[in-house]
Length: 130
Image (tube, rainbow, N blue to C red; front, side, top):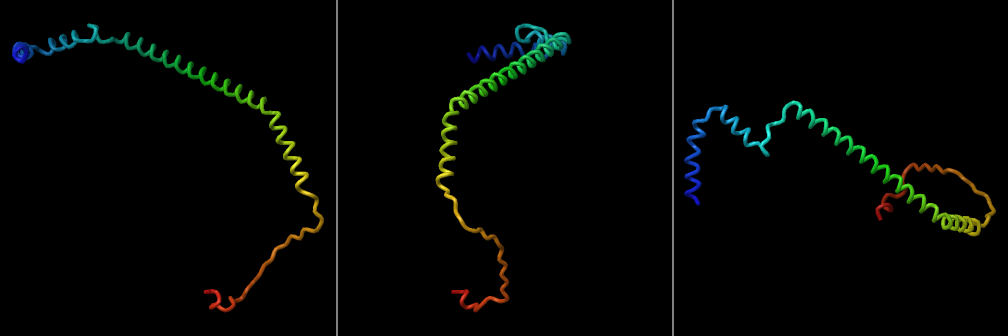
């Protein structure tokens, strides 16, 4: 097997050395995938237009998907809100009943004020250390 590779290499090397740049370019073009020529200006413009069209379609699809997700989310939220309305009403009534029964009316005065105390010197510093 190794002998076949060296024979093939020795046969191709002189041919590559004798090729001029035009021959090398034409042989490189013939080795294009699927045997196609590189795209010309029209092919590049067509590829750009098709690529931009696919991007626009993908953006439109993502907007539609986002709208569907928002609508489904709002529908689920509305359904849960509707189904829990009785529980919320019952909780509200219990809170009101607890607030009225737990807090009896107190009689008396509320005195608000502020105390400002000024002290000239601390009394007996040795007592502060203990």
